[in-house]
Length: 241
Image 1 (cartoon, rainbow, N blue to C red):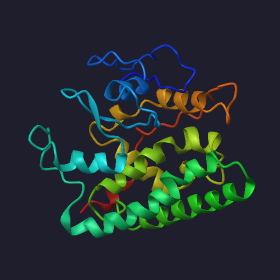
Image 2: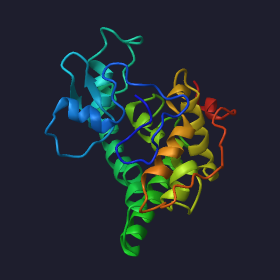
Image 3: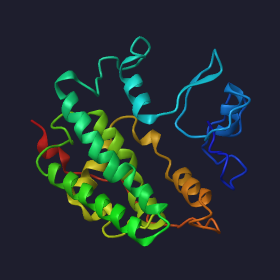
Image 4: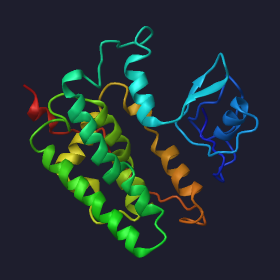
């Protein structure tokens, strides 16, 4: 799918973006309209698309990551990879809940707050959750122990954007990710897992965020920095057994 959306002022495909070779859609909105011509709801991502039935199977990220963990093992390159192992499920579910509330959704509550008090409450919760993660990661390589789980993937997608987007665009500026030794090295550790770097295009990420929210950034100016190098060495191997 290309870096087009129904709200951004970006009108031409960005370099490095993939086109929709199945439907020729130029926006996520067009996909929803293909699936349901009378659709009047929100046009959101991610989208799990059924190319045979030409419809949206699911658009909830928490459900999609679970589906990817098991439902496609017959065609998966690494079918034995289990990000939701039975012995850690309770711990994963508990961590997902406070990480989503405090961090994944917390940065959005900061960014889209329209009054000072809700912003400050969300801001407080974001940094309480980040501090909690920092403490956990001082003892274990991953959030739920010595095993990479879906919790780490869910946390990573927010952390990788934190300094480049959320610290500025969403006013989460008390402390940068780079100021958290454990969290920063943890983010680099996950980014350097084979294949993960290919899921991150920071230019696309920044142009989407800074160009899609005119109420926050009316002129669509995209900051030049800080261009964090997540491929630099990290120290997480100290937890290897």
